[in-house]
Length: 326
Image 1 (cartoon, rainbow, N blue to C red):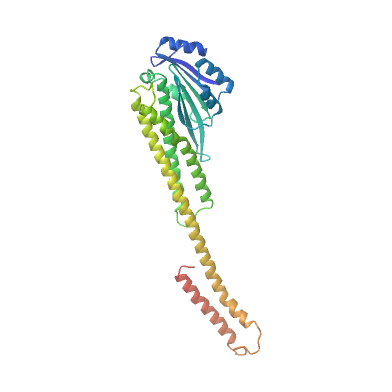
Image 2 (cartoon, rainbow, N blue to C red):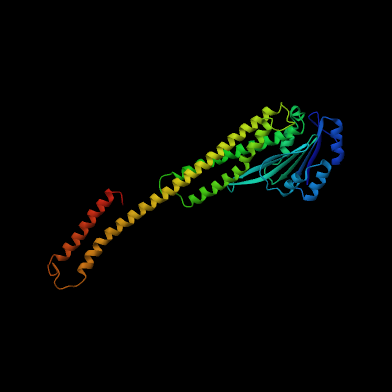
């Protein structure tokens, strides 16, 4: 469905016809205007109508309808098609979700197609409409503003994940036995970081192409802004790589802790088994009821046997305690 449609001239939103074809003709007639059309999860039929009005490339239209695309930048005759992955973070479930944002950028139009509820563009449009000087640069100004908003969203979520990872790391290395289910939580966190990486890492190359003059029709005045976006995105990717490496280290440390804990448990079980074996052995020998058994008819035989058993157990206990087996 159409979320918003407007004509911009000299960096300002101006009244215009509601019909898309008439609006585009009016923007082209003015020479310095453009149409910004925003769509949310359009059907194939809706996007076909828009494509017919704006002359969008059919391959790009197919990608916009199907979604599930990698971040990329495609050049078609007279237009650009760019795909962003939007990232959302749900604190209640500690989960990362993704959406998609596609842009068709032409000489006098920009069409945005959004899939998913993360990072809506209504607030961005309102903010950008206050930047008159920026909007005078045309449709590519919208491209820059969206790229900047998406990457800033990445940074916010990266910092949130970093704070959560610090808490998780503190739990893993806290004294005592590791918490139950901590390995599953680490693995789930690692999957979230992987989802994040699939959104941010492929975007690096398209943003660099825009920022370094690798794409025609990008005003030189806009390139410093795009370089700033590229710098922020590099920082995001470095943070994501750091999160992934740290998670691997934490998972390995947790597995090592579990292994050490299991070894400690086995040593304690072995020590207690040795202590239990002493009275079992002595009682077993004296329980065989042989006639010719040493000290069988001695008056002090029973208390001496008990005393010897206790003495051996005490000696073994002290040895195991000193060796930190108990």
